Image 1: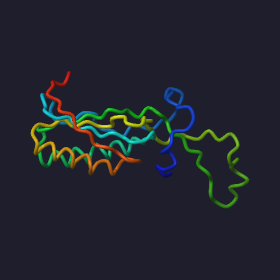
Image 2 (image 1 turned 120 degrees about the vertical axis):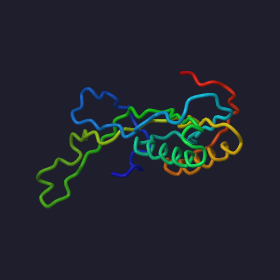
Image 3 (image 1 turned 90 degrees about the vertical axis):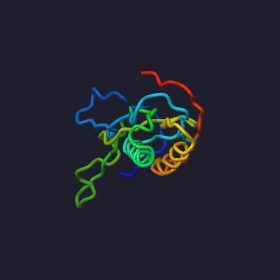
Length: 170
């Protein structure tokens, strides 16, 4: 299964996990990281197109950004937050590709498929991830971290800097 098959979100979203046996587990370990506090800058990762992002891509983006930023600012020099959650169940109708498969499988007849992954549908211009930092040196490190992290995302992304000067709510 390739992620490119699920990049476009077509049709109605299926989110009812209570009806599914053997549903996939979410791969995202943490949605927030670093130290909560007062920060000068908020650096956002925005997606440029309407797209569907799988939970493995979200987790790898988070890991890449946090690892790069932690090396320069330390564990307490930043705060990161994911702004999307993968609710949508992605299904795959697996085909049998062995000898005699035409007598066993039914092809596309009654093709409902098994739930294989989770995804989040995002709008154009929606914020995927936020990094909060202090100082201009840390601001450049946060931009670099998001540039290296957006490679893991499908589609193209934009980095936006907001002069924050505010306190994060608990």
